[in-house]
Figure (cartoon, rainbow, N blue to C red):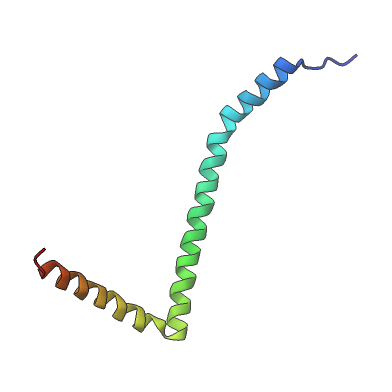
Length: 76
């Protein structure tokens, strides 16, 4: 005869497993997101260089800096 767990024991066991493993699972999910983000950033950078958009992106960044400087000089 096999011993089965009661509903209370099953609930307690499930909660214990969740408490112990959920933090580890969340940490690993965050690592996966981080690696995906890094890979995406690298791919975007390589693709922009490949199609020549990196020059345009640099010009936009310079234009944004100049705009911020110009706006900071305007009295409010």
